[in-house]
Length: 493
Ligand SMILES: Cc1cc2nc3c(=O)[nH]c(=O)nc-3n(C[C@H](O)[C@H](O)[C@H](O)COP(=O)(O)OP(=O)(O)OC[C@H]3O[C@@H](n4cnc5c(N)ncnc54)[C@H](O)[C@@H]3O)c2cc1C
Image 1 (cartoon, rainbow, N blue to C red):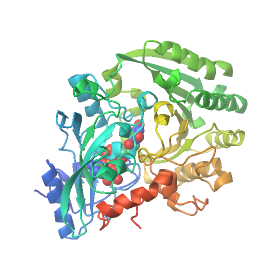
Image 2 (cartoon, helix red, strand yellow):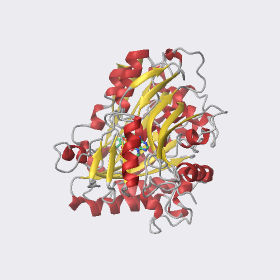
Image 3 (spheres, rainbow, N blue to C red):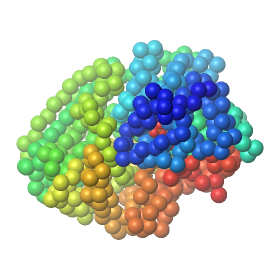
Image 4 (spheres, helix red, strand yellow):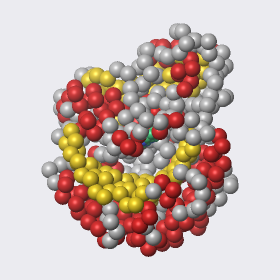
């Protein structure tokens, strides 16, 4: 297979394919395989020549796991995008280079079904599904990984030979542990996923239309916005409390509000507004939204704008909340820090948020809270490799900047903000009654640093909790030479 070197016209374009411009790599060459055999060939070549390979699918890694100057061979999955129904497995076969948007499009137009996956259509399924993958419909249908039936993975054995292996969730499958590791273990750990098979655990029969959830006929979206200049500390506190109380009340798996997903964007005051955006599905979607906003926004007693719209499913899925993903948002350098919450913010955490979001600094950033739970919370922590199964919120402190000169102030702000939120537990959301670690799809290498993680708890516990030893065994078995690694990869031990 052809090696794409820096003098190839395609190289600069491929080198630019990464969401977070904070990181850059310079691989000696790039492979663009078109089949599983070509992935095997590419991996074997890297092993034989003792070069470090790394795989990229959609390029949306938030840390520098792919765009890393020590990576010598980049295996880019962009040309492996086939999506079809596999009648032998009664499951959809999806190649790893497809984007989430293309998956939504093909599943809907072909069969009227969906996978409850992530929010941004440009994400690659390759690095997304195996990290658990939550999204707009997770409260109704669970995580994308909860619908994973099988994986085809190119791995390297102890003798340095690359080959492909298929692992499914069938209880008599000898490779079942490898399937399990791909339901939340995260990317770049065990090998290169070439293909996923998708079929819901409760699907029956052999018809493709019954293999995954049926798409909704429509999606009702809502947007509420407050002008920051009307907000004082008392109303801010009230709003954050209301959002948390709503999530606590309505995140049970059989809550009627499982069909509603909501995000509050507590932007830094520099950005001018505080917003809630979300959606609901089903015949009483508007009613669910009205009730949700009556609990959260109404009692604040401040003027706000409100917009409710109905869209067809695919139109929404391919361009959800266009203002969130405007042209140019992928030119940004960014740092995100994530935390699962089992209980709402405390008074002191809200006071910390107020302090950082009103700090007199010229930075851009926010604290975002997404409603979690619902169907996600119907599984046991060890049923998949995604162990957080009783959280009510996924919370993120994010900041972005446009050039190297913005880095220091923004990083300092976001890191200290997050650390102060968890000041009583070493600066991190340790699994306890209120918090429950972090999401591997939103990786944060600060967890490996004593300056930012003073809890004495290793980074792996935040992502994997009690599932980590099982993931280590899978790593030892399927990647014994540790060919696939990065700053937060699973260690065999
Ligand atoms: C704008 C934006 C929106 C997002 N929204 C959501 C969301 O709604 N829900 C959510 O859960 N996450 C979300 N994420 C996080 C996203 O799921 C992860 O960043 C995911 O890893 C991206 O996958 P990728 O293939 O695009 O990235 P890549 O950069 O290609 O890869 C990410 C990691 O996975 C590895 N990897 C890639 N392909 C493979 C493969 N074929 N086999 C094995 N390992 C592989 C890479 O080596 C790397 O370590 C979002 C990220 C961004 C930037």
